[in-house]
Image (spheres, rainbow, N blue to C red):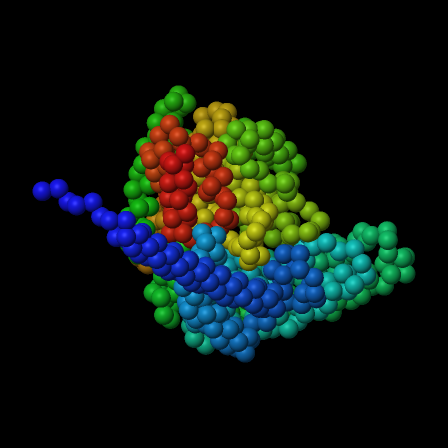
Length: 604
């Protein structure tokens, strides 16, 4: 039976009820939206407050970084590293972390969430290092407190009398800063938390070399050798006199005290064992270094196995390339040929620098094909300072100070030219300059609308992983011109794969130094000097060497994932821009951001 049609009166009542119900729903939705908006604004405001307060705290605690970030008012001092300083930092950072953990991240924007995750990671890592009291070993073959002090004002913009007086005040602070670090190292002696003897024997002479009889020979005096014409003659003479006095009476005696300490009490107390895990609380220490440099908590045994698999894969590629060259002989004979034939070595430091510069400009020419966004900051090819070159690695990148007076610096070691093969220069330049460290670092410094702490943040797995990825990218860019340069690239990749095996071998598996030397020499074409310098670096700096290959593996996995998911929509320039768009990120955060990039690209 058909349903009777409702009367006009009934229809009116129904319509009124529906309208009232709709208004109720609308009011409820508006209330929910208001509540959600208020929650988002409240969470964002809380986060910004913590970020701002933490930044001001960071400037006070780390005046060296403050100066390099272009922040005025801190260039007259060095950090404090006493027990009171550590206690203050621990309390402050635990409070910052608790405040961050109290913020609900759900209503935050994507950019705010990255800020939240990054600052939480930075704080937790710093707290862990503080609680492990890592200040007891404030030096290795690559980094040291005296090196930080020596380089603290390098590249800073100095124009006024006050700028130079601040610099002189910082030199006068060497006394306190060096003595505080020596005191921490003495506590390390008491605790048994010290460097191995082989490392101390290597770095002690480099400190002794900084003890000059003539203060003007020290690199500390360099800014005073050519003062601005805007300063009067009397002002220039006074500044030069004060600088010579500060260097002669404070800095050089401070270097001498460190050298005496390293050559004496510290060398006596240094360990004959090499392993981080053999130190007091060593397993926790080594696991912390893995979290710090790999930005993931991975068991050393797993990393060791990954390294062995990579060594096997790369060795097969190297053997195939040797056959392509037509060389008749074994792998060992081929690497001996590369290490000894004069055609592969520069005759003068200038020749080496010129070749690296030429390669760099060839790469510059190709960059727009592979990157949509390029940095404004230039870079240069610069020799490693002579006073540290004998014990320094092959090359490094030194980022420019924000607002400073120079560009990025691709440091190339010109000491012992017979140990600096030119067939490695293409891979080395791709890694240290462009599109490696300089491009990535400069883009990070030029990020807009991000907190200041992110513009100078360096996470090793991201930065070094990108540098190693850049070496392989050079194949696609067409910058390797012959089989020897290609072998140099493979040797460099093998070098980083060997690091996974050697670092974990030394610090977790009880490897000897000779075992490590043999493994690296047998699997790469690195010169014997580089082999020794590298192994001693791994011994002195647990965990850091793992970051290169582990980071590169993750970046390559992310690219493969994007290529597979996007197929014809995959754009390599867009992928690279997205990978670099947020500056340094821990691997887990980077993967989440690249998943968002894939989802967004798919929807287009």
